[in-house]
Length: 322
Figure 1 (cartoon, rainbow, N blue to C red):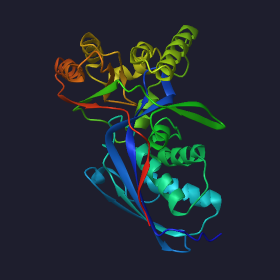
Figure 2: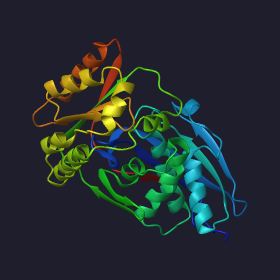
Figure 3: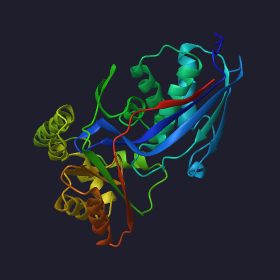
Figure 4: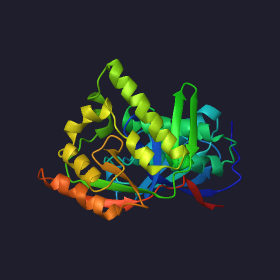
């Protein structure tokens, strides 16, 4: 089928994200107002199915420009293939989310791309389908089509994935007093970091750990529903994934301890790491103090780190449509 685009060009930006928030592995996600990827899609022919890829931005050198390995291009290809649309596109990715640090970098690219192609070609796609296509794109980088990063990057706020087959996801607005502190250690990470971080996970878990995680995940979700930052923090304790991944992050236990002592409501690995994330009740605690404490926790084991204070973000938004 040949798609007649109603528009020639569309530019969309999508935010960085954090996933899991402790016990919500592959389920919880949160959009962050810390960095954004921007995708520009332009129609270059009415047939041919070609996607030309260009990559720019501060992290362009870390992202493949090959259309078969670029998460944004693969996500767009999935949309065109499944809907039977034959059109040639030029995709320009401005890479603003740092790759391989636990901030959903590959997901931000895919999220911006699917929103852009849907707007450009005037496709009547529900939000859950956009999330599904973006997850397929991210599978190129993560080795698995998980949606916990692309969902908040598209929908914004805090997202919960109830199931993958069929995909079912909701978005909640975070509390207005929710502050986020990101402590990013300066350590080497594997090229395919997310795949590597999944390989260390246990293949089976004890019933007591399952019960622990269910209870704590419920507290996180209730905290967002009730707009209670302290409740969110109380739920951010994982008995399954984080113990397995802690050994990949030098100073993990120090950082967690220091952050809680400085007043953080909760602490977790951001996504697959190595960034550590703390949630802060801005009505009670200065997030800068928490950030300094987290970096000190890294320095105690000889690791330099930097911290960033941010807030939750809205999802992908259209910047240009013409």
